[in-house]
Amino acid sequence: MLKKTLIVITGPTAVGKTALCLKIAKYFDIPIINADSRQIYSELNIGTARPTDEQMKQVRHYFVGTLGLEDYYSASLFEQQTLELLEQQFKHRDYALLSGGSMMYIDAVCDGIDDIPTIDEDTRTLMKQRLANEGLETLCQELKKLDPEYYEIVDKQNPRRVVHALEICTMTGKTYTSFRKREKKERSFNIIKIALNRPREELYERINQRVDQMMADGLLEEVKRLYPKRHLNALNTVGYKELFDYLDGRWSLEEAVERIKGNTRRYARKQLTWYKKDERIKWFHPDETEKIISYISQDYEQRND
Image (cartoon, rainbow, N blue to C red; front, side):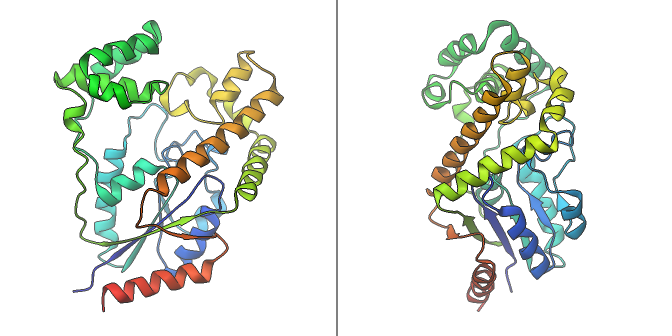
């Protein structure tokens, strides 16, 4: 029996995933399953480089602009919903296409994610209040007591990671570490993983140009509209947090824009480091459309020969 194939196309921010995926989706006549943890929010448009209305008319996209900023979401939920979607798509198609730059979302679909309990609303509200009132450092010290093993590896500057671990500890009475088994799950479909890259200077120039274009398209006005909600985790995002600081008077608009560019370049390096650990990935330049299509087709034939 032929096994269906999930095509995964990823790569650093601004590398050119959207343009390539539109071509791939049209060639195989398949929709795009979006794996971007911020483009899923309906109010984040310009700053997340979300696909345009015209692009979404050309090809159907899933998980774009479907949530409100205050809605709870996670990589675990993304895994569950994407697997359900793939089950339906594979009834009618041999291929499906998953694309985006959120590393944890892609790993969740390809390899599975630990079965970590969903946080109840009371616990989430309590920890949100504690973060606001007591500060991140206090919560880090509490995590050190409750789960010293995870404390040693967590990014202590990332409030989301620290708070989530504490939510698990306080809600379950167990350590967050005890739920992190890191066991890969078997999938019923084949997976082709493709990552896109460009020469570093070329990528950095594209990042700088994208930020300038976002500002020209009205990013500052978008940020001003969202300012009352700046405490929400979804807005702890490059492009938004720097402009919030500008609105707070911490630095000039010019400096805020330069910080967006620098932080985006830093995030791109982090993405590349993550991807390069995965030996299953095949690397291409975004302009190599024909080579990529040929690689996908040959891989399918070889697996199902």
